[in-house]
Length: 265
Image (cartoon, rainbow, N blue to C red; front, top):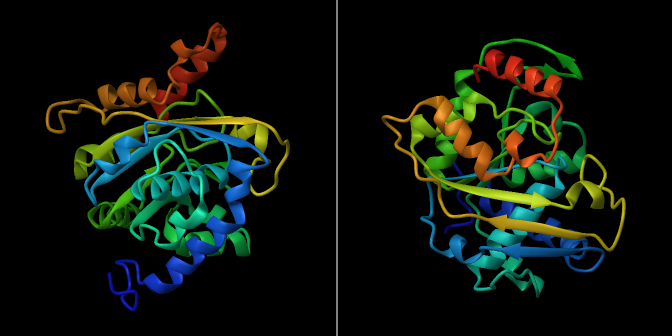
């Protein structure tokens, strides 16, 4: 890959490579020393095609979740099995990994801006902005940019659109799957909320066992399967379906149903 070239979004690959290296070296101890990241299913990563892969995951912090994925994916591609030992894997990172993030989040400081260059497909939220509830139409350029990223490589998304657990899957993820027909890989993470602050930039507590489970691709009939069916498969695969709760209040279920009925994207 010619590093003097740009990716489809106009970012120089050589700059992207050094940003990934920098963040990789700076954050490695967060998952290998201060805390311990337990990985399962890394062998699945090596079997994936170079592009048209969509990773769907639950979400616990703004940035630490994504950084962990860059570590795990690159370590797995370099031959490590369920491990991110020896940071050398980050020297030649996969440069066509992207993640979907809110535009306002990626403009909230120098670190988010650098991370944005490293692979963000920044979109405008249709339901929330500046801490307030809103309701606006999906920008088709955002949808197109996700398609461009999938054509170029791997895309990470957090389909609940929030770091709060057991919130409804946004329908836009299912529409993206039906439209672009990617290989869909579920990931389940845990321990990040206890380890880091909400943004995932500061270590909140040490000695936490973090888990990172990569699952087999979802089986989806892109042509015949309904949006609702795809959403349900995602909910179960990332363990965010209400059935995973031991006890859930009746009123909380009603709130979830009301939100589901409102979410078009």
